[in-house]
Image (tube, rainbow, N blue to C red; front, side, top):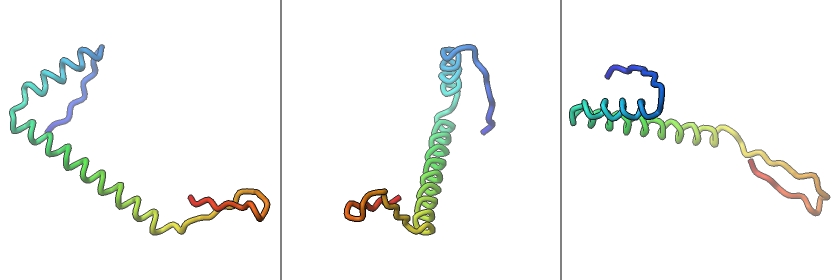
Length: 78
């Protein structure tokens, strides 16, 4: 699907243009757009999950001690 950038003078004009655009689409085109959005969302989630697990696996946990007397030392994990 071709991507086009439009500039509007107001939010109302932009909303009207969106409504007209989606009204012109066939049911199949609307379904195709929905499926494309779902696929993009799934890929983004997979990327976030893999980045998150890689960062946890590759970085050892760091421990910081807050300046207090040895009896009151606290451990903070980042």
